[in-house]
Length: 140
Image (cartoon, rainbow, N blue to C red; front, side):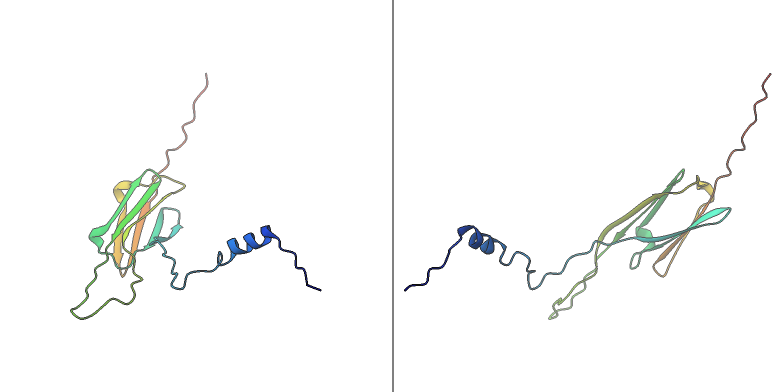
């Protein structure tokens, strides 16, 4: 007597569709966009911002303050220097524009801001604007 096996078209089609669907390619390396990491601290008189921007010349860094809005941007350049006979085996350095914007709790005095860039760290000192005292209205 012959063995009879049940053949389900739907199960086989689904198996064929899903086969290899979750398998990553052999040389898959996700690219991570360049990031601008910051630390913001505050005291009674000012805010301090420290931003990591390694491998950038200070001429390529831009910062601006408008009220309580702070913006930092930099152009990260990829300078490939491959000598004759040499070939690039792996490149993990990113290039392009990095940008970060954030708001602070209090307005900043734009005239007294200070910026310093050293060893890949941008340090901003942002003095707080003196808040206007509340004027009491005399009711007659």
